Amino acid sequence: MAPHVTTLDPSYMSDCKPYYSPVSTAQGPVKFIYTAGQVGRDKNGVVPDTYEKEVELAFKNLGDCLHAAGATSADIVKVTYYIVNYSPKNRYHAQVLLKFMNGHRPPSTLVPVTALAIPEYHFEIEAVAAIRDLQMIPPVVKPAPGTSMSVDVVVVGGGLSGLQTAHDVQRAGYSCVVLEARDRVGGKTWSQPTKGGSFVDVGAAWINDSNQSRMYALAKRYDLELIEQNTNGNCAAHVPEKEALVFRYGEVPAWGEKDVAEIVKIRDGFEELCHTIDIRNPWGAKYDDVTLEEFVKLQGAGEMAMATVSIWTRAMLGCEPSELSALYFLDYCKSGGGLLQMRSDQKNGGQHLRLRTGTQTFSQKIAESMVPGSVILEAPVSRIFQNRSGLSIVTTEDGTRYHAKKVVVSIPTPTYKQITFQPPLPLDKLRYSSNSMLGYYAKMILLWDKPWWRKDGFCGMTQSFVGPASVTRDTSDDSRDQFSLTCFVVGQPGRDWSKLTPSGRKEAILSQLVSLFGSENESAIRAPVEVFEQEWVKDPWSQGCPCPVVPPNIMSEVGKALRVPFDAIHFVGTETSFEWKGYMEGAVRSGERGAAEVIKVLGRRDVRALAKL
Image 1 (cartoon, helix red, strand yellow):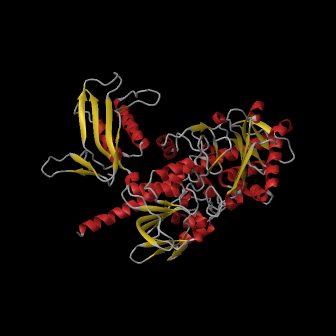
Image 2 (cartoon, one colour; image 1 turned 180 degrees about the vertical axis):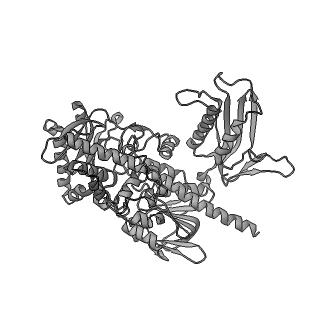
């Protein structure tokens, strides 16, 4: 159960275990959530053909309602069931209840009825839940430079993973502050306003509504408008010294029969192979003694197949196939449900939905829902000291000291070196972080007054072996007359492009778009109304994106150290997620994990402290 919800079992009453308790209470500043009765009906209005499936779907729908309000089953204080023609011989709902509640036993009432709203319904469930209202807690007052304050938990980093950690820790009843080096929250989610009142994402930009459950739940909770990624129309591909090829989205460009066969073989081979990786225990797999480039060559790949793999790693990680181990890439693909799903812009894919207000809204909304003042900006951490009693002192660059029982580090592993850890990080964790690297990742987003590419049947997606942009996507918001292409300037072509002057970088992109979409569009291409550019390697707090990679032999030898706490210090971040690493979904999931680790340990301490009273 949640810390603010207590179930009671008076000794003078009959035993109700394991299904429910006679009474429950909700303590502290809480707000109550009331659900309507949930039946076993999907979003299309279809009722399952068996009673068991109907019960399971009703519980799922109840869980979705709770999640939309920011609650879980652990926050339930009362539940009521309505069962048509109830028979004590058929208590299937009790099995589902035990699994759904996961050890929590709120009071429940079973109401036998002769009928529900329509004849197809046989089971209905409603609940009352309570969550801590963090906005009712007195605000945190930022300490003056050189002074100190004490909290239960300090989170280093105000991106999605750090904010999710802090939010969950505060909801569990512990005091927590977030120390963010920048003057904004969001980390690698950064949404910039356009002159026309829309937003462009110079950082992370996409979610989906099928297998990225955390991000979609946040979008629903905060009532955020979603835009489906445009894949209607043709794509363009470009190789050196040849005209651009036009092909349908989802197909392989017609480079030639032999090249296409090789590309399909390599693509399908990676798709099959990545699904053999155990994402929770990939260390025992082979494939870690060679780079991805070496591995692909061992498969007999020719020049075009190798160039295609380079497009993958550049677009997905900002690096070259020679810069990461084959195992790392396979594990990365598996974390997103496979190579094809991770690269897809369609339903279930990694790039399916965007936010009308930009993805930084996620971080802003989470921060707004926390204890006022608990996210402290412009507070870069310089030192984390742990004493022998298990307490920590986190010091920021202005000399302010934060005393805490637990510290959660939510920054990329290559940036650990910017903080002095005392005592030093364990050797395995130090070796991992020292060998991890962030790829070169930049976006140039160009806005026009019209979507000129669509008149010729293009969807805006391109891929290029020439560069400087390896991939482009249509990132328009038609409802606001914002028509844009986002150019991903990544990997080695991006590093070379970065050396140009600002005007040279813009000209290189415009010239490339002319080559891709045809000289007949040159006048339109060269008349953007607004241009945004972001080179993440030049951000001192990110130093690249989206996710650090490692070379051969690091995962298999010290990969287990990535998520392991170091005494009172815990580690989160999208790279530490088992699912969807490198994506916002992975960031939020890792934040949940870090919070759960901290809450579990602090809870045990609380129990021991009470036992001494």
